[in-house]
Length: 202
Image (tube, rainbow, N blue to C red; front, side, top):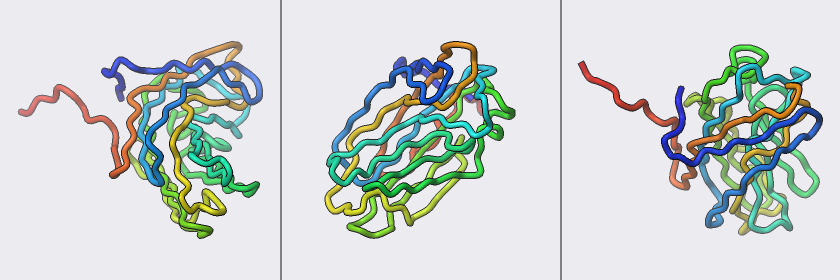
């Protein structure tokens, strides 16, 4: 699977150790209560963690109003694709059966581009009706509609996220680079992976 062509990829430095963060970039947009975000990530061949219970924050969402704290991160959580939504001291964890080992075809990075897409919709008021779902390489991996991103979500929106955040206990003997590319955000619906190019019809 290939990514690229836009000329605006991002290379994230990742070192060994707990909660290691090599510095990310911030994306911002007009505040919204629902969005889809698709991006590609490539871990280098042999990229390793020191435990199967690995963590890798690929995106970290912030919000327009920090008072009600509806932020969350998404990436690899406990060895599976998933994340952590925190609101007013209450945490909700989501995890799918799509694991690091399953996606990479083993315990270490495969050097290939993989497509990740997340969809979030803010809960209304104090209700547990927020939507959280994601796709891996175009396959729906997780979908729920009972998340409480905020304990009082009236008027609360998201307006920014960090790309490339901290990793927990990589074990590569030094700094290596994880690549991000082809980031797209939609407020109207599912984006999906980039289609193949230069196909010939016979």
